[in-house]
Image 1 (cartoon, each protein chain N blue to C red):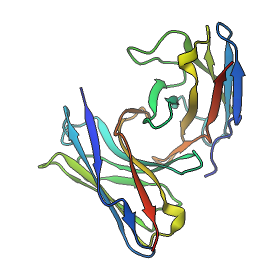
Image 2: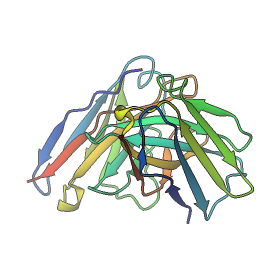
Image 3: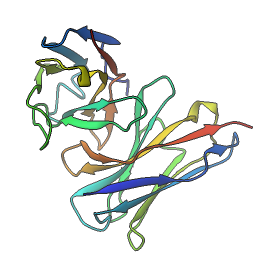
Length: 120
Length: 110
């Protein structure tokens, strides 16, 4: 059974960089066939795909966030990470990491989510 | 990219069937078979219910089914049960290795 767990600060100041890590167990970030994904959910409900990365390091981002987002993978520690720069209150959300079935564009395993608030 | 359009809420009585629509464009839903649906209970992570328009993952009840016509995908839940009360989200491939979600639908079981 694949499990994903997000970790990182729950509070970030405006204009700073939000950094989160997802630790994968029961599966390997170095195996092909899957993309390791970040998705966020605003307090009002909506889900937003942020981007995903393959074990090779190839990453794809939501065009609306592309200038501020970096996703990286650390296969030696079976983790992948999200960095979102220049955050504002509009970036306050629950951040989920998930596994995407490569080529299928669906997310079969999700982390429990972590709330990140942007506030001074 | 604009979010896919879903009704804000739907409701039904136990035993009934309901359908949730998900309308996109010819650039996303209309062009690809990669539509998926997720169920989310309060305080929980979304759960995959349907992938590739109409495929059910192992362990998902066959009361859940998906379909697509043109730019609109649909999720149908038959034999509605109290445990089906949740938020439902559609998701579609939107080209250029990007993905887009719907705004979500709140299902109430009366």
